[in-house]
Length: 240
Ligand code: COA
Image 1 (cartoon, rainbow, N blue to C red):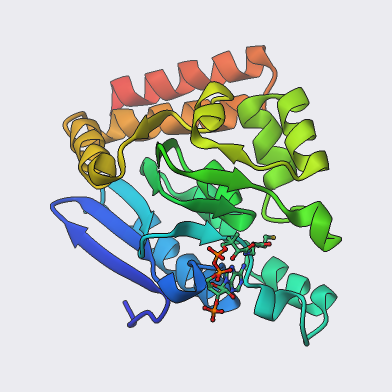
Image 2 (cartoon, protein in one colour):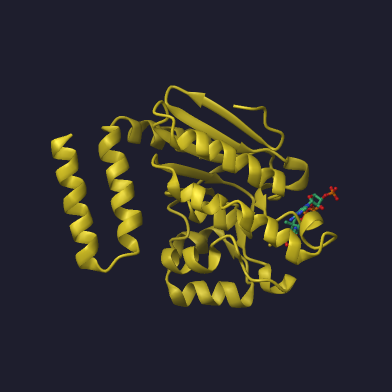
């Protein structure tokens, strides 16, 4: 895999680590970051040596402060900058990864930062994390999936309030809303993510991937179709 500039990639004993690595810009999501995430996720999804993925970010202050505003709201005009984002469906790429993705978040988690986490399977956050979708204040709508993934995760009413008002929420509220699975002190964030990854890794990888597929695909189906999908996956596992 080529050398990356704004992410780090590492693989240790079946766990893949992706680190957003623009700490001076609070890990703002740039076009370069989009391209590198697209590439690394593409490699991971076809890598049979990867059982679990951990996504995290460098620096003390932020997991990700949203879209890179220097690209987004200056020349080229926003419409082109946004168009460039659509050209590579990094969010679809996230969802195509068969292995579970654990995201470990700290500090500011804004805009695309939240949206990225909503494409992951298990969200851990530090107790000082702050979450916000500032898009309406910038005159844009979320376009990294947030208007779809947020209501699916926390329900329509809570999602609408956050999306329409641009109100930021603290870690406690994020937990209450089930935007995150668990809060941990900063020093325990990566050890906890690691522990969880190793626990998941202790199970049969075919079973783990089938569970992930059944839940994500099933969420978009009526219950009957979801139950049929679950039966098919169970049968496939039995025959494998
Ligand atoms: N895009 C590009 N650069 C960003 C950025 C972003 N979204 N968010 C922060 N940065 C940069 C700042 O420009 C600053 O760079 P500098 O040191 O070269 O001046 C550096 O990161 C540190 O940010 P700063 O604003 O000084 O930190 P702070 O602690 O005072 O404030 C925030 C933190 C997150 C409240 C503030 O940076 C902010 O509001 N960022 C924009 C959030 C946003 O609207 N994102 C878009 C969502 S769609």
